Structure formats: structure tokens, C-alpha cells
Length: 258
Picture (tube, rainbow, N blue to C red):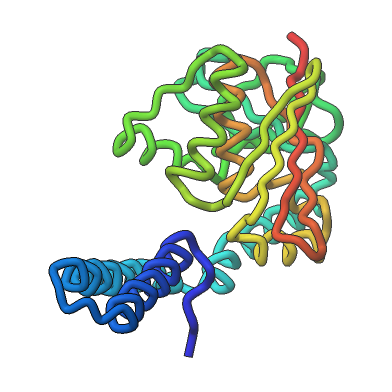
């Protein structure tokens, strides 16, 4: 049996039930047998019923997040292994739509270091300047759904982008209890606390830290895509590290120079 966690609803329910007990006990002990006693009893019953209602809202998740968090893990691990076999050693770079005439945001996995050179439309990039694998990011279906369902509009101002990242992660997707997003120069840092999909991150990190930097999960990929489309520049994932004890993930991105 799963007991409800101490969510805000559960804490409010406990407070209301305790208040109901205090009101009813006060009415019994004073025993005034007048309108005031009746009001205390009625108020106590209202608090009790409201507390019971809040308790129903504080139940555990309908889906077990330990299972859900593992859904994207093996796909990322497989692609990372394939890239390693092909000699692709660079970190994932998110290419925003509109760049090089593209109509979709793409993810480029370079053989070595990518400096922002123009890329062809082919999946396998083989050129004198750069080479690698060009695919859609893992967040592509998620980003399309957010645009259709939530009418997502990505701003171009960096402060607004940080606010959007927090809103997407905490309020819309509800994958984290708190998100801190900031930048210093060309480095962008996003820290997700109380991250609900931490299990998948730890499995990928245990396989290899390269899994997160070579083929980021849909959440980190979404954040990188938002920054890429907002700034109009290539965003590279530098590091993504889940905390071994706390449900916290720290992701670091860099904005590649033109």
C-alpha cells in the first residue's frame, strides 16, 4: 500500500482535520448549548469535509515514476554506443530552425569539435570541415506538442528564456519541483531540484556520462532546443550530471560563437 506523500494538499488536509477536531472539542467542552456552539460544530464539520477532499487530491502518482523515468534511457544508450563505434566523440549540438535554411530544429553529433560550420541536409555529414550524424533531437515530438497544445512561443530575450525554462519544467511538464536557470557569458546552467525522472538519469550516467552529452534525454534536449531557437545560435550540451543522493540534475550548455 502506498501512503500519500507530504504534498501541499496533504499538509493542508492534515491542518484542516486538526482544526476540525479543535473546533468540535471546544464546542463539547464549553457546552454552551447556544448558537455559538452550533457554529463551532458546523465549522468543524466543514473543515473535516474539506480536509477529506484535499486528502483525495494528495494521492500518489497514477504511474510509477521509477518505471516511467527509464523509458528514454536505453534509446539514448544505444545511440551513444553506435556513435562511439562510428568514432563520433563530440558533444550534442542543437541547430535551431532557420539556420542553413532548415525548417526544423536538429541535433548534430560531431566526430570531434563543432565550430558552427554550415551543414548539409543529409543524416550522415561527411565533409572536409566537419563530419558527424545529424538527427532530430529527442524532444522534437514534445516540442511540437507544446506548440500545438500550449501555444508555446519562444522569446528571444535571455531572461525570458530562463523564465520559460522554469515554467515548462515546473508548471507545464511538472518534472521538477524547482528549477534554477542562469547564464554567465556563453555558459548556461540549468539545475533541476526534486527531479521526478531522476531514475533514468542515473541509469544513463551509470552506463556512461557520454550518454547525456552525446544524446540528451527529452527534457535536457527540450531545454537546449528552447535556448537554441530563442537565441538563434547553436547550443552545445557540455555536461549533465545527476546527484548520486539527491533528486537533483545539473545541466550545463554553451552558446557556440558565430
